[in-house]
Image 1 (cartoon, one colour):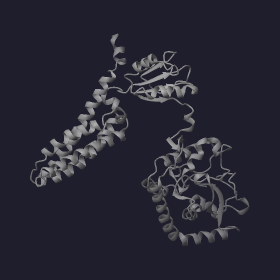
Image 2 (tube, helix red, strand yellow; image 1 turned 60 degrees about the vertical axis):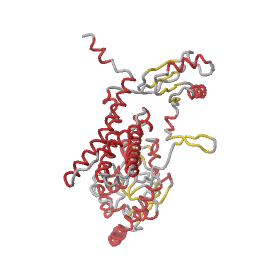
Image 3 (cartoon, helix red, strand yellow; image 1 turned 120 degrees about the vertical axis):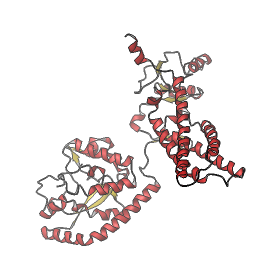
Image 4 (cartoon, one colour; image 1 turned 90 degrees about the vertical axis):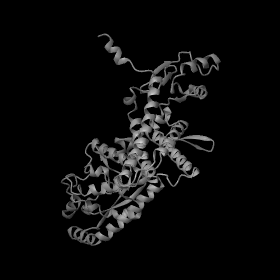
Length: 454
């Protein structure tokens, strides 16, 4: 029928969706708290006598609702962000719990206060509120049947339109001129944006300041589209004195994380060095007997902060074939490799002296592998393949890394060989944890002998 296309295009009004959002989330919060306390009471009744816990809940629930509303736990800006939604909900719950405990002490009912039920129920409530609010925020549109937030794009002149889904795109076309300082113009602008949650202005650079002044009094979240920021990829805003600045980079790890990672490196590397010391002596003897030259081979590599350091390896090539700059990648049947060296490279034993680099602070046990200055992929220097190459040096290079355990090792014959490694390195930096380091170390033992190790 002809009405079918209309049904597909139809969507509830934003105010209806917003009401659904608030009611649904409020109902979810109450259910999480009530069911948590019901479960706690049921567990207690299995082993002990029943307790009067409903009175505590009757005090907590209205306080929670008031605290959540007052703390903007149902505000659009907070519900859109899962973690802010969780924080607001848990803050309101802790306030309600504190109020119930305070009331019990004030009314001198602590003798009959159901401590066990309240303790267990609170733990359950914190967990269910966090999980429930997270899932609600992540699947908001599916739950309430649409997007309750209205985003308006004001396009001034021929400014480029940013990518994204907008509720409406309005061309100013002289209707709105922020430089005119006309009260009637401001009135038209306010009327047009009355039901919007957010407005983005796309305009020429010389009009941005005027639009910024116009939006500051509009009682709405106003933003200016600055396409050139895409290349800078700023992380936020800061100030130096009275001058605003853009934060475009920070270290991937905070002070506590760096301390934990460094302590782990020292402990792990020290134990490994003591355990492997006799083995190192045996390898050194084999290298010396196989070909003349030093036991260790050192090469300039790019380390943290793009600083160059001398990385150590067991020498696996004849002394006259060693490539200090790394201009020539090692091939599968490379005639420069000695007999002992071929075994060392195939089993990754040649990398073990880098434990000394770890103890010296140049490297870490886990991190992006350090590359030689002359390394190439498809006859291009690594940084010529992808400009993000330098980003991987925000952390110390590692003995092993995420790229290695995924099998990205060996010669970089084509650009994709580098791109795969770079993608894994950047993923590692974005989601570091000490547990992931331990997992990568465990996975490394599976790839010590690898077809691409030669």
